[in-house]
Length: 428
Image: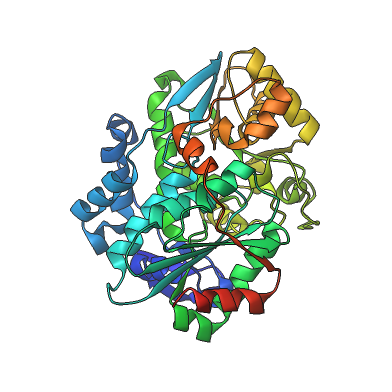
């Protein structure tokens, strides 16, 4: 598999190199030079989740790692389902919260851990540096916890993720190091980028990233879109509209890649909260990020989404107009109203899924089938959801366990010198 740097097309790397590097020169994202031909899509959709996902990912990377190795990686990573639930007539939820940290990031995080283990020198030092607006942190922490020769440093905005989200990854210790940054998620992402720009530091600590900028995470997410369509009525194929709650836009990128590979999806909707850089851009053509606003859908509190260049590149490659994307932005008040409506209709959701559901319902046309992504378990936002719905939510076992544990994070300012000191200190 060959991938090129979106900021420097002369830099072309293998899958193994892209996984190890994370980013290319000038903080450029890697992108596949060519998409594989998956053959008969209907036959592919008849296969089970692991078999089908192995086929898809082998089509990308089988020439480097071998089909059997890829299958074992997928089998190790995808040990939980991605079920589809019907919410009402012609509208379905893809539930991506049945993994160990109760969020969709488990798919990408665990496959990346398998990928890095497969392509890394066992004697080399590796430091995973990543920023999280909520769910990435737990998925990455649990995926890499206890792995030899790999240290993990996770940055998150202090006070801007839910308490249970924080407890799920800031209580592990061992090779997992967590930093509460006095700033926003965008500040955390900027610190990560700054670290990758420091060539001496990258070499010193063996720096890598587990954000959705890493191609292995993104490729893993393609697979659950195929799994969703496989579970829907066959009559839905061809008239399917998929609404994706979007923050850093890796999830939507994966969905569009699935469509480019032949998955029958009529159109996608980019659903955001009031941090609406992309909806405004799609409306007026002006890229104008504003200061990040804290919301009850905190994992989407992103004003400068890293993955957007991949979407523009893919649309250009495929000859798709950006105006073919649906879009919409939802306020906290509208999110709360939608959660109450969904609960009254018999489906318990959380803020991110509710945003995708609301915009889907606003834009779904007669004869179409709608699918929205539920990216996290409602209990991960227990305080917010209970306050809105005025009822108690039971804690799943992983949250109950970590909720009772002590936070191990250190607090740092939005200052690169402080981050550099942390990265050097964890090597001891």
